[in-house]
Image 1: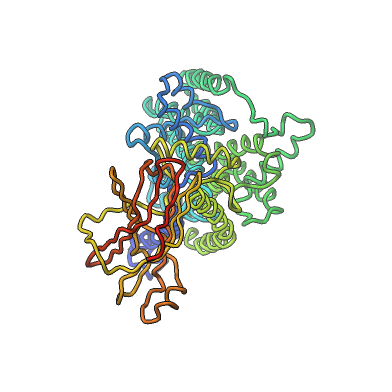
Image 2: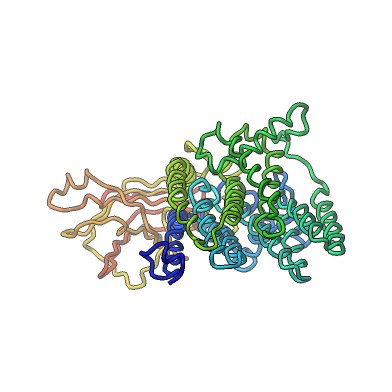
Length: 565
């Protein structure tokens, strides 16, 4: 029996103790990833319209390779997001479209991969357990809701952290291959987000400290060329005021930097953020003074990168953010805190009882995680509500900006772009009514139905009514709309509606769920003259009836009601 096991007699072996700690650390990971999966949708939202859809539309229009490169390296809001744009382009080249739910999953995989690398390269089992626990409770909680729930943030903000971590790990190997890989990762980080450029400074410091002068010379040369390319043609977004370009703003930038550093532990308390930022810097300085640089060739350089990256964020966003720390930036501060605490654990470790301090701190880490989830749950829900509300109104009306929230700051631009990519077949926003196939559907003369209205405008087609089987209970999602022309045949799902008027008129039937509403953006239907039919499906059969109503899309578009059945 090991020393640690005797310390905790409930565990017979040290391995059992380690497995118990690991299982406990999995809880926040599974919670956050599961929550992200539940709210994931293939929706183009805000930045994704510019960085992904506009790029795909230009590729679809036959851009030359020079134009493609120009688009991939294009400057946007002081960043060159080459890596994510390349991912979007690769998705288009291989599948003809892009799925933002998949992109979001890839973004979340980036942060999981970083944690896996840091745990693996931590060394001994004890160090790996400490690293894993700290990363689990600090990185996997709802302070990071924007990154976990939105591919537009995760694909860049999680990716740049992974690339910076991979760069530091490559340098730590001390081999020529590791050094070359580190340069590649630093190059990619630079063209993922602007603060990726800090990897070159941290790498140079690591090489200089280890007196690898020849490699340092090449590193600096490649870094300077990369920076020159990054800043070639560089200009600031006119809507962004950069703090250091104005007199007397250095203090504001410094305060915002400290707030960014301290925010992960402040739990939403703005006044505490700068003080916690100072505490982080103090702990980092103490670790360096205690010789951590020689012992921690991954944790310490990566901490310096995160701190430096937030300094660059502070310079670029202090005036824009007005002191507010956005969720997407929390990952940098949380990573810095996890690594600094890891350094403190390593300095204070007890060889005889290697897990004692960690076990004692576990309740505090769990409490912090729970409080962070509680504090930011409202913001996480609000973000989803805003996105879904904007999506719902676009689905309903075919235009952005008609609800309380919008898909893009410029709704008219969003509506035009979305219509263009949908008409080109590159991407389609989630549809309320999807196409289905019922090859074994039978004609029925027993269905009862009524079509209340058919509306066609410049954006949408909508058809409402009710349908039911006599003697059968109506259930949601059973009713489908059939559109039959001389050239094509389509069957679509419909949105369920309760019809109290139908139950009042037919009290002997259970037809409350007999109502339906069909909606579809008009440019997604061919310009044909359709006869309208209704189909009801159940587990055992599908029956349909063709009505005398028509939907004529050959001209301006018109719905023709034949009268009541």
